[in-house]
Length: 168
Image 1 (tube, helix red, strand yellow):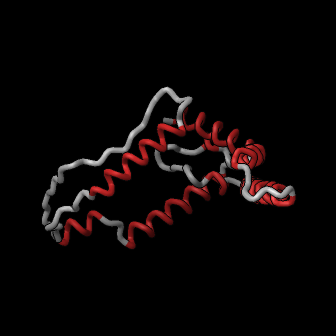
Image 2 (image 1 turned 180 degrees about the horizontal axis):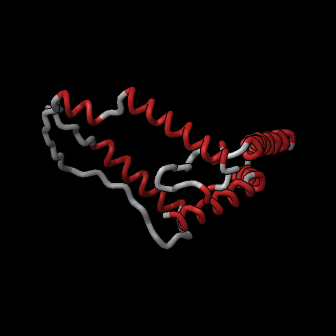
Image 3 (image 1 turned 90 degrees about the vertical axis):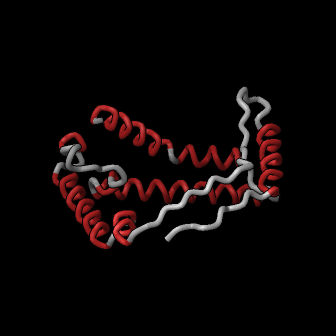
């Protein structure tokens, strides 16, 4: 399988780039750095004929997904048997990234409750703003409410990052 036609660079993209650049520039007057989006005017097309073996190696197979599930299950069991202590695990054999919620039932309940409380807090703030007659919500106020409820999650993420820094 190979791609035989190049993807054209549209003039609309370049015009959109100017609009994006102008929007970024106007919204970042207080920022020192300016950012821009650019599109190449030239196309470089490469061809590669793929053999069936290449495709087999390029994409995850059902066996790969089954192995991922087995690895996750083994890691969660090891994490629970260690009482949620990440330092008790072998960092070479077990990667807990993304599985922290599964460490103990208490952590799972705490995190899901925290997520629900954050959502409820933002919805409540939107309702208050509607009752005050505001047609649209104040994003900064919604951000404040969300960050207030998710401070513990930020603290937890910082602690996990510190553990990662020690382990790697």
